[in-house]
Length: 315
Image (tube, rainbow, N blue to C red):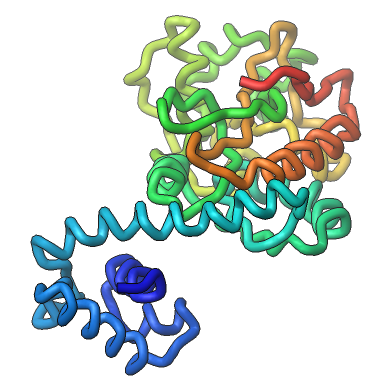
């Protein structure tokens, strides 16, 4: 039994296809199949049911995969320990980012990080919060950036910044005349608030604001979309107003910014954190990523006396 064979087993278990698994492992399909077959012969069990499409794990195969994940993850930590001892910041590092953060934050820090740490092979993947939690627990991600708190016992959270919500109000909306918003103003526009589709954590943030102000949770919202750009366009068509994360508003043109309405203090905001498994050993790279992001966030442009705050403490 070898670590390589276990890598191949995990790849097939994930992709449920030998050809695709071989591509992801950068080997030929016959090589991968042969190594898995050797492992099955050594263990005298069948790990995969090849008669089903897509390929499925056998009952014993499911147990083997669970243990294989632990073995592969732990074997990788040996190199992490050596790198950390030597102060070497390099190697592959996979980061997941939720969709409502990735388009705005990634361009802010990516170039700086690459220039400062050229030996790190930073792999960025977009995932939902639910997917990120699962992948961190399975060792498929080294770290992630998401809205917190998550209340996951096995996951460590380092707060990066607090991002205020900003209302985007079209001219035909009575609320357009207001210079600043209060959270209570959402009650008057509740039936016309455009939200992201179910499954986006930003949607939950908005609903939590409503719950906190006793606005109810079963109010029918007119329209739901998968992107902020679509919500803005729908608002411009007179179909309602929407809420945006502050960083998303920085690249808006002058005409669009006239429709932005900031909230009075205390401003509703979301907590954005760098998260990782408590078993993670690549802490030197995590700290490099945290410091880089904190640096660019501190230098973020202030807009109408709104600042992105970067906490000095760690959770």
